[in-house]
Length: 439
Ligand code: GDP
Ligand code: MG
Figure 1 (cartoon, protein in one colour):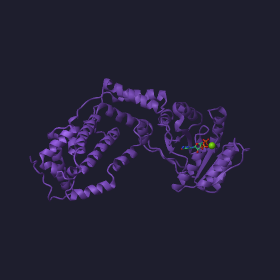
Figure 2 (cartoon, rainbow, N blue to C red; figure 1 turned 45 degrees about the vertical axis):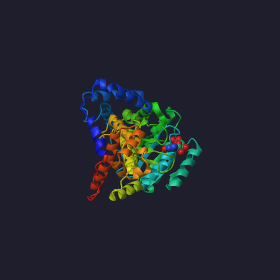
Figure 3 (tube, rainbow, N blue to C red; figure 1 turned 180 degrees about the vertical axis):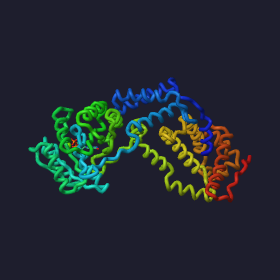
Figure 4 (cartoon, protein in one colour; figure 1 turned 60 degrees about the vertical axis):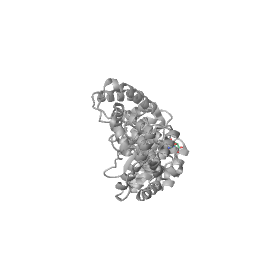
């Protein structure tokens, strides 16, 4: 059966080249996908232009349709744009590493402080949090509580001390205690304003931080590009942390960050728990932006297609040459589902192979087989020999399923071929001959 699908697929293989004409429509889809993912318009324009320039004239890999080939180019380009690989945090060569967090109000800076300390602990590094948001007493309390949760010290100096002074004191304290990493929380505003920027500049001057990380809410949307640009021009950032990726957002802000600042996203927040901080993977984000979901989760699903117990059950039947139409159906459906999985995976570099037309072909033949198996009696399903031996039975199945008797015969023959092939696969060579169909 698998080889049947393979031959259906191979029929559709051809060679083509990407042209201005054949990329026009998919390019529009890609443009729309990017805008829907909240990538800023100027970024989308530049990106689409760059990809079009690059794509025209590119030879299409055999068996891959032009639009898929294009998606591959787009995907590769997205990954490259977002830094290609995971960007690690930088640590100071001597003395404490200082991480300054900046960003608008409510984006998750204070939460990130504690998450980051928790993350660093797993890397074997000690840290200290410094409470630099002096505008609301509640902000200091929040940091203290989070610090207790992850069991790291929090340096506070109340709300009457200037943030830059708190920064200086906090850093001195951390040096005294031989802390590896100092994480400075700062106050945000609802919008960018001069007071906030001046304060951040002053804190930065005092701390001379190893990392200045801009915390960006993944829901920021279209304004992300302007926001990142301003922060980068004003205070200079070394990277970003994208928070609230557990929400509905497609994460288009991720693309804007790197495009406009040249600085990578280093970490992502995926929830409110202290464990919900992880490295930023450009390839997974590219998948999310293109609407393909998380690549890894698809791979996992594909692996689940045939459940463990099913597989074991099947194995027993193969060993005892009892593989019947019920198993056949199960197996066929699993392969078909793998097919649709492959379509998604096909969009990912290095995995492109199956075209939508090939998938449709496979799904069509599955429907035909299902129709015939459905009208078989339970006995016939379990003992395919009954159908092999009686043309009356085959005729009945054909009539009730609206297929031809020839199609039924083919199906029966296919089942026995499969029995043999599976037994061979299992290394069990005895038995399992293909009976001739009696009249
Ligand atoms: P700050 O004003 O930048 O310090 O933001 P906070 O750290 O106080 O966070 C604001 C709100 O966002 C809080 O309710 C957090 O629990 C929530 N939050 C922070 N990070 C995430 C995240 O990654 N996912 C979700 N769902 N909520 C988050
Ligand atoms: Mg805060």
